[in-house]
Amino acid sequence: MRHIAQILETARRHNGQAGLSGFLLVGGDWFAQVLEGEAAAITGLFRRILFDHRHTNVRLVEIRAARERLFGEWTMGSTAEPLYNLPLSPMMKPSPPGRLDFPFDRIIACAMHEAQRLREASAKD
Ligand SMILES: Cc1cc2nc3c(=O)[nH]c(=O)nc-3n(C[C@H](O)[C@H](O)[C@H](O)COP(=O)(O)O)c2cc1C
Image (cartoon, rainbow, N blue to C red; front, side, top):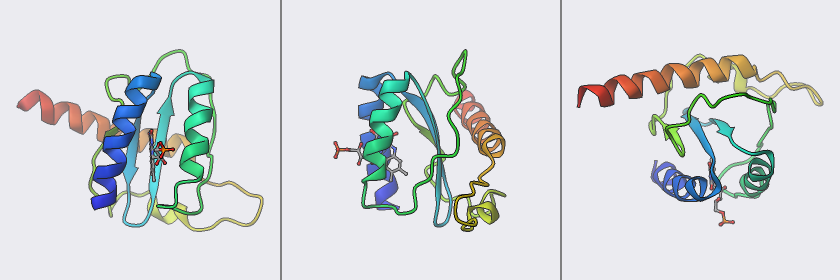
């Protein structure tokens, strides 16, 4: 949990400077992250994340060209707490070598769902 706060602090500082936005889903023993921004900025960040010793087994799920951002109001939005019940966890099991079966659309849907909950919670404040 200490790591998550640190990750988010660094992420928000750096992503703000780099014009990146996104959302971080935190599972019991996994993360799934959506990054939005210019290709060069994304590539640079992904390289750094790959070499971050705080996690292993980093996978790139998919890169898509997008007309607009889904998480533009966050330099890195997050629930910041593990979502043990999120139906993403069964899919984080290792897949056969050479196969990527992390479902991109599912990750986006979960992140949008959590983002909406955050928006509603902050609208109440
Ligand atoms: C799950 C996870 C997500 C991360 N997301 C970001 C991010 O969005 N932006 C960022 O700058 N760093 C992020 N980091 C941290 C980077 O891996 C790296 O530690 C950080 O960018 C500082 O890099 P530096 O020590 O080379 O300056 C993330 C790390 C983890 C483990």
